[in-house]
Length: 417
Image (tube, rainbow, N blue to C red; front, side, top):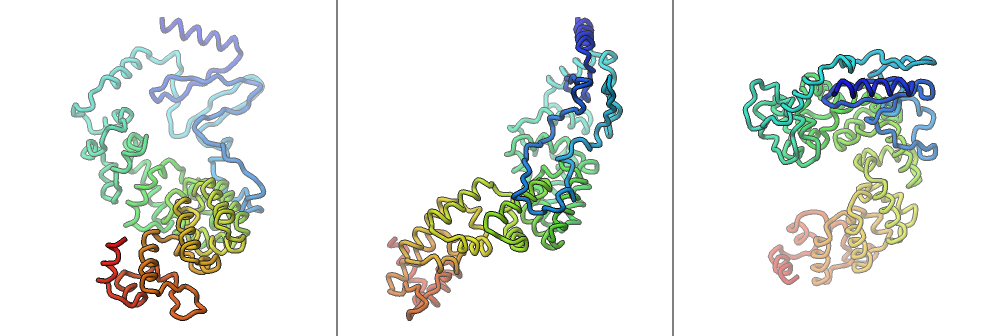
């Protein structure tokens, strides 16, 4: 019966004058029909080409083609060679994979038998061969604990030695099954050496891979092109090392996306290229942060808080972390500092870190100074208290040097709040 179905399918394909292109047999039995004359390209569902490239917000205008990686150039992928003529599309070769046997020559019964064995295999039964864990990795579900495989997976053992917190991988969908399929020498070694050469310290690799295990999906050629782009826009090697170390997700962004992000921030604050580099180095997470959140914070700073464009530029240059903080919390801190304490916009621009401090700490110290009659933040009047002292130093230092009191009296006051 199966033979008849395959024959019928082949006859139908021949009648439609299309060529049957067999997919690589990775336990998934699918095929694609490619038209011979109208289409000259094969579409791959595994690549994301949804990013739009605009000319207005690009950072490197003259060198747009300098370091584009293969994420945005599907026609130059080395995985597949396609020979086109007027009559047929022919599958030539696969790099790193064995070409599948013709569909009609495959043993259907053996394939179905293997699938049934995999589906009915009990994961609690000890394996005959430790390497068979690769077959079980496809069946790992989020409920499974990676600790169950640590004694049989050399990859997990090496990750733990590097300091990776594999418990956090379990909380992310698909990461556990993906990592179990990887081989340290074949799939990971080059990426680890690449990170080390780019300035990620060995003692920091564990934290780095805990945050971003998806780095192993990226091609080394693409990672090199992204580093070359950063050098092309005048980032130094030390700055590149800081960008990658402080923001592990940076390398997941293609050169086109990073160029658009840098151009966006240049346009947002009216910054020069050098100022954009300063902002990126100060807070590397800002460049890859949600643009919706960044736009919302910019509107809040100018419209709701009342800062001018020049004051917003000063804030983003001095404290870019403001643009990745929780928006409602930032607005509440501003309202208390500006409305309750009477700090002007110019004072907040001069002491921007006070906007990042915890609100309850500001309230406690301000109310204590107000009780003592020392809450005076005008530099032109006597007994001036710097707003920075409300968020800097320990409580002992605050009491002795700013409030001119004792830590005992301060603790008694805190109990009254």
